[in-house]
Amino acid sequence: MTEPLEALLARAPRLAPGHVWLAGAGPGDVGLLTLACLSGLRQAEVIVHDALVAPAILDLAQPETVLVFAGKRGGRPSVEQADISAELVRLARAGRRVLRLKGGDPHIFGRGGEEVLALAEQGIPFRVIPGITSGLAALTVALMPATLRGVNQALVLATGHDAPEISRDGLVAGALDWASVARLGQPVVLYMAVTHIVAIADQLMAAGLAPDTPAAAIGSATTPAQRILVCSLATLGETLAAAGLATPAIVVIGAIVATRARLLALLPQLEQEAMPWQLPG
Amino acid sequence: MTEPLEALLARAPRLAPGHVWLAGAGPGDVGLLTLACLSGLRQAEVIVHDALVAPAILDLAQPETVLVFAGKRGGRPSVEQADISAELVRLARAGRRVLRLKGGDPHIFGRGGEEVLALAEQGIPFRVIPGITSGLAALTVALMPATLRGVNQALVLATGHDAPEISRDGLVAGALDWASVARLGQPVVLYMAVTHIVAIADQLMAAGLAPDTPAAAIGSATTPAQRILVCSLATLGETLAAAGLATPAIVVIGAIVATRARLLALLPQLEQEAMPWQLPG
Image (cartoon, each protein chain N blue to C red):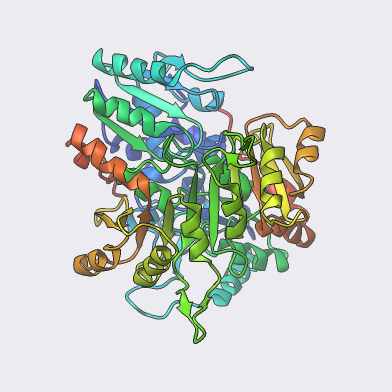
């Protein structure tokens, strides 16, 4: 007989009063939650969560746990990052057992780094629990292995949140050098890129990436709202606009996208098999 | 009272006879296992696993489950990839409920893509369950947030498995263009890079990456054998050699490495807090 699961969770570290656990809840599906995150959900007295954390996951918390929403939803302005950090410090100082819960992984474009620095500056003990990052889970459910021998030796994860801007003298402003991304010639996984996708695709093509490079967008990966759109680099903008793809969405550009068609041609039922786990809380 | 874990898992999809689940077990710690992977461990009749899957994780399988080792350990030659795929097909055709279990994430330098293509070619139904990829978990336990506003807008995951080779005419052979990686100017996370680290670091420096770029190596992340070595790009080779760092190890190069020192200066106890969960099976 294997060990009862509740006994397994009982051996998890304690979330102590006045401590903060910063945990990733994964892309959305309950099946992609880690045991450590589940332990945090059960031990927390207060959970400060983002909009990207699925209700089915929050349902796993104790009924008496206080849920604090700290995120952006429905176009309303987001809570300021400094306010979130201050709230975490306040709750920890009040002796609460605090879970800061984010969609995906806290340290992959999740601003978790800023939060742990703010906690450390105030002397608040914390622990970070990795989650399945949404970009990689999205590729998997879309039947696009992120790496494939003979196809790619690297993968670029990038944020599309900051728009590439052309200044008056024709130079590109903005921190990420999209031309260098193009010249690397390896697949790119873009987070938060829907808004600026036309500008980003234009930059990549201007730097030499072929317009017919395979591309795809995966919306709300591993949730009931999941959508998979396959196109090319040149048609990304029109494809996303025509589909009215809502955020959150992951965009992937590169040869790895083509594996999806190979797999579906061999085994059409995969379209269903690759659907989310759909474990409602 | 929250829903018992047993009841939660009972709502997972069924691993049917003749089907294969290809799952990532995460970097090693039991706390970083997903509920979906745990469900697979419990349902499987046969588990075909790599050397990187921790014994404590295999202990979560049913006692009657057959464990098949398919990996490299202790310098012995690895099982051929084609043989592993053939074994998965054979087990599925025999009507077994098969879990193919890999360390980390099956699709991040795990050769999972080759295995699913082989299964699809033989008409074997499968499902892929993402795991926490070791490179990202290693950064988190080493107190190095993988992304930080104002520091980086992208992250390169790359395999260091293939050596960069200088051919007779001075050109670099090998598929990944390390000079382009250097010119991108974003942090790089290297998998399986210990063997070729000197050649890779030399290529990056030759392309203009500063020798004093922060660098680190994290061995056996989230396991009891975890080791964290911090150095610079120029000293990576000698640092790894002097420490005798064993594989598996993750190497990270870039400004994000410096966050570790900032956090430890503010909160020295983090050195302990960031240690693995240590949930033995």
